[in-house]
Image 1 (cartoon, rainbow, N blue to C red):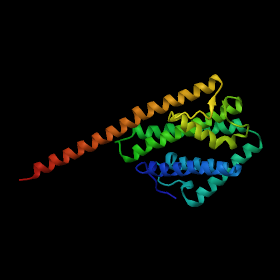
Image 2 (cartoon, rainbow, N blue to C red; image 1 turned 180 degrees about the vertical axis):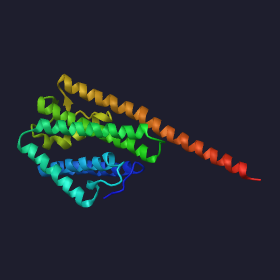
Image 3 (spheres, rainbow, N blue to C red; image 1 turned 90 degrees about the horizontal axis):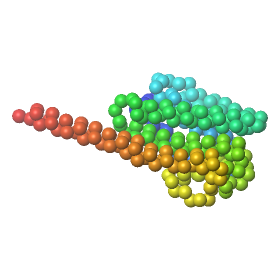
Image 4 (tube, rainbow, N blue to C red; image 1 turned 60 degrees about the vertical axis):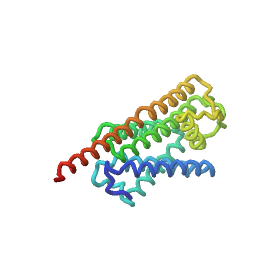
Length: 234
């Protein structure tokens, strides 16, 4: 457990964690485990708490192995409780709020704190993945309110559609658009094309700018070192 994770290396941990958790989403969807979905979503929340919310703290209780297990158990139980009580919309709203705040916190660290380095470029990748996850929750929330908003999905509890809508969200974010799931209602179409626009602008502007600034800073430091070393030579 990364008890001493800092803002110099937190996004490396989060990139690995989100990649593994997205693969876990596919596995859970393959074997259709409701408990697995709850546990997986709780693990994603824990990964964000550790790497985004706890990066500035020297020591946080949930960044120990015991604290991680306790927090994971509490989050899983809370998810099961909300499901048993039929509070699906509330559950999704809480998840959407948490993902949105975590994404904004990550954006602030990447764009507004210090020099651009490798960790911040990885942070830009993490933000892209978080955008896809946040939009998948938006689609789940839309289906709870308007069940026929998306064509191509069988009627099911939102847990059962979680992995499918994660897939649909990333296909939309990258503008692949396979067409196996299509928006039917005006609000669904709005969310879909706004995600596609956000995905294209994000890659074209933010990530390209960060990489360009990082390369420019590296070249400037390199030239300065060469200049300083040439001045020291007799």
